[in-house]
Image 1: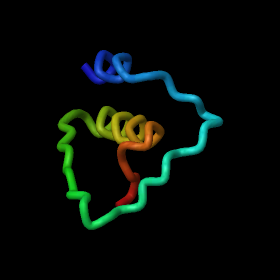
Image 2: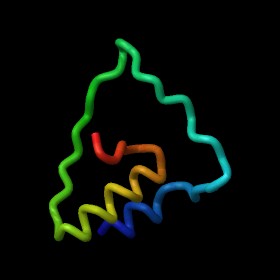
Image 3: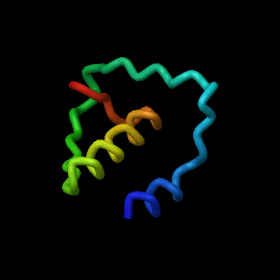
Image 4: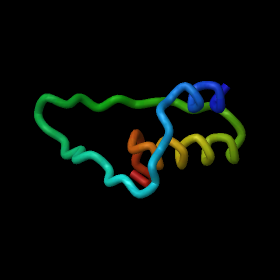
Length: 58
Protein backbone atom coordinates (compact mmCIF):
# COMPACT_ATOMS: atom_id res chain seq x y z
CA UNK A 1 0.00 0.00 0.00
CA UNK A 2 2.80 2.44 0.86
CA UNK A 3 4.60 1.67 -2.39
CA UNK A 4 1.42 2.29 -4.40
CA UNK A 5 0.92 5.65 -2.68
CA UNK A 6 4.54 6.70 -3.07
CA UNK A 7 4.67 5.64 -6.71
CA UNK A 8 1.80 8.05 -7.42
CA UNK A 9 3.92 11.00 -6.20
CA UNK A 10 6.34 12.86 -8.48
CA UNK A 11 9.92 11.56 -8.49
CA UNK A 12 12.46 13.00 -6.05
CA UNK A 13 15.53 14.88 -7.22
CA UNK A 14 18.01 14.26 -4.36
CA UNK A 15 20.04 17.32 -5.39
CA UNK A 16 17.08 19.70 -5.34
CA UNK A 17 16.80 21.99 -2.32
CA UNK A 18 13.82 21.47 -0.08
CA UNK A 19 11.17 24.17 -0.24
CA UNK A 20 11.12 26.72 2.56
CA UNK A 21 8.65 25.28 5.02
CA UNK A 22 8.72 27.77 7.85
CA UNK A 23 5.55 27.56 9.95
CA UNK A 24 3.18 30.48 9.88
CA UNK A 25 0.07 31.44 11.82
CA UNK A 26 -2.00 30.24 8.86
CA UNK A 27 -0.69 26.67 9.14
CA UNK A 28 -2.39 24.04 11.19
CA UNK A 29 -0.76 20.91 12.53
CA UNK A 30 -1.71 17.69 10.78
CA UNK A 31 -0.99 14.35 12.39
CA UNK A 32 -0.72 11.15 10.40
CA UNK A 33 -1.03 7.79 12.11
CA UNK A 34 1.00 4.96 10.59
CA UNK A 35 0.13 1.48 11.83
CA UNK A 36 2.47 -1.32 10.82
CA UNK A 37 5.45 -3.28 12.04
CA UNK A 38 8.22 -1.16 13.59
CA UNK A 39 10.23 -1.55 10.37
CA UNK A 40 7.25 -0.53 8.24
CA UNK A 41 6.59 2.57 10.34
CA UNK A 42 10.27 3.53 10.27
CA UNK A 43 10.45 3.07 6.48
CA UNK A 44 7.31 5.15 5.97
CA UNK A 45 8.44 8.00 8.23
CA UNK A 46 11.86 8.15 6.61
CA UNK A 47 10.40 8.09 3.10
CA UNK A 48 7.96 10.89 3.96
CA UNK A 49 10.87 12.82 5.51
CA UNK A 50 12.91 12.43 2.30
CA UNK A 51 9.93 13.87 0.43
CA UNK A 52 9.75 16.86 2.75
CA UNK A 53 6.42 15.81 4.27
CA UNK A 54 7.45 14.66 7.75
CA UNK A 55 9.99 15.56 10.40
CA UNK A 56 11.95 12.75 11.98
CA UNK A 57 12.46 12.82 15.74
CA UNK A 58 9.97 15.58 16.53
